[in-house]
Image (cartoon, rainbow over all chains, first blue to last red; front, side, top):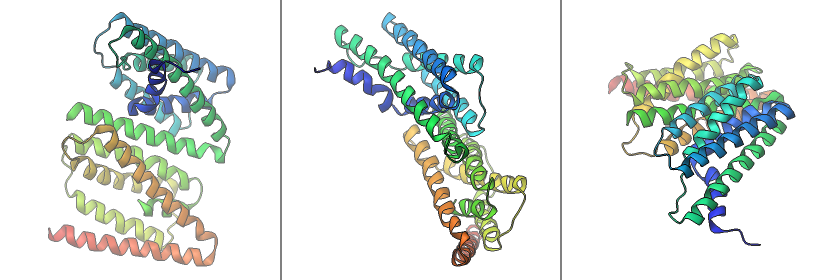
Length: 172
Length: 149
């Protein structure tokens, strides 16, 4: 079975857009630190937000500061990862929801053909949720190794990159 | 950057991972100051002094308390971040620049830690201390150039 080109492009979109990769990695660190029910709930909240954001795009919402919100979320997630703070679900779920909405709003389809654009939006929803689940699983595994040092370092890198990108966008 | 990793390895746990976690975050703060054109006096001198100080810490195997080590490294991280932020070429891609800047810094820390882990052998301890002396010497050359500029 061959997937439509729009779906394939949509699946690849979250993992080929650098700002989205940074945001997904940051949120993945937060989700991966939680045990399974809470981690799965964070991923579900993100998927829900992503669907809402993509729905808003389909509804015709124009340009928004979604990319900056996404990077602000990545900064927060990176700091949480660097400080090795285990965020309770009532705080992590809204963060995941907002990140999902922002990622959705920042993923307009790159096609003017309705059928292909819808396929891209569906692909983006599936790709974003799947990518987050895989990153969270990897983070969960790595967290057990050497007291999660790798995750702390990754968190500090993610936060530093997001802070610098935001500074560059706002000043240049 | 290599000296940060080396000193972390000399200090052992938890400094070996706390310093590489703290450095990029503080360096990003310095980078923001540089990008926003907030002037910090004598940045080049600060960078040279940081190389001398950190090199000496490694060469003399100074076992400073963790809070002191974080403070010293963070102070120098601001100079490094500011220099990179201020020298950002116009039109540079924001994400590519930021990711390259942070990842390259982190990998230099990893190099330092990798070298520093050889301190479990006597030959490794000597090599690390010599590397620290070399870094301090290079810093002295930079300092002389910065002061004469």
